[in-house]
Image 1 (tube, rainbow, N blue to C red):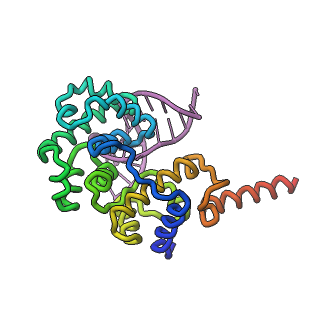
Image 2: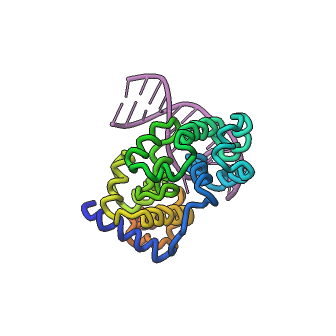
Image 3: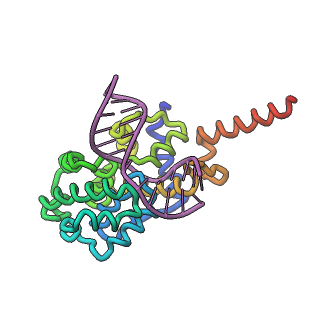
Length: 231
DNA sequence: CGCCAGGGCCATA
DNA sequence: TATGGCCATGGC
């Protein structure tokens, strides 16, 4: 697709005018957002919310970092993968403690080195690191998730296989702006939860008229129809 | 019942 | 570099 640079922005504009501003990430505090970013790894947000609710009385970094692993695992059980996530949260917190549990110290870092440090933590991958950088540290970086890959693949983009290359596509197609990146990612999540699900609901999708997936779907339905009428 | 969810690590080739 | 197994709950 040779005009993908323009179309990434077009998709944003259509989603934004359709859904309006999302004012996201679902979380009541910076620390809650950090935990949510880890807890939501390959997990539905509904299950993450149950875990967050269990954590509500303990939602500060110092308390959680001192909490026994078995206790923490039990509290976050509803989010799934609770043993690995317990380790990941603890790994993250031992790094965060070196930063004095201070958001400001994260904000004072240069984005690239902050990202490198986050990625060096066992259990923090690209999406989790970028979610923290965008939604907590509030630096411009585009979050690529399963929704993003699915939506744009279906639309007809021939996406690169690796995360950073996909991210570059978005960085090169949009104003390099925290608010835009924040809203756009939230809009993609919103749209994919309603329409571009694993089993898509294309009928009322605002993007169907220029969606490759929908176009092929219709072609297949028509060819099936013709096959049925041949006999 | 089976499928899926806002990943990431590790072993293997 | 890239593919597969693994981690696990809860909603539909």
